[in-house]
Image 1 (cartoon, rainbow, N blue to C red):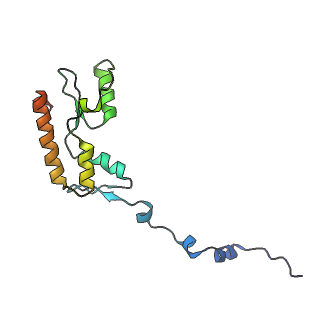
Image 2: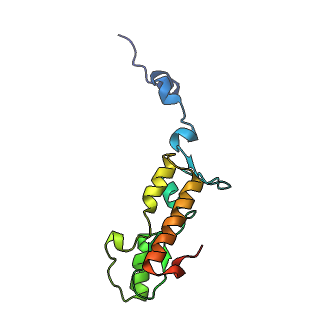
Length: 143
């Protein structure tokens, strides 16, 4: 009868597979995407965070449809806060009622490399100006 042998910590290394010993690189853990705008070198691990960041580079795409109000913004939550604080908490209208242009579609085109950053900004400016003229709210136009 053989004596019982207990495993030492060194033995446990020998029974694991080589792939279990590899330490993943930061690139594998965080597949970072870099902002496509010149002179902006911010990296984001999640595409959603990069999309939100890009809204800072393009004109505001939301507006308050209340008469005489010139509020514009980039986040629906900001519009909700604005309506609550400035307009007595009226509900947020349907999506088309507060969009100046479809910024999310524009950002997706940019990230899919269908358009350049310059083209995205140009398109956003044209759409913004066109909507402001249509609404008779040229005072929305501010950069």
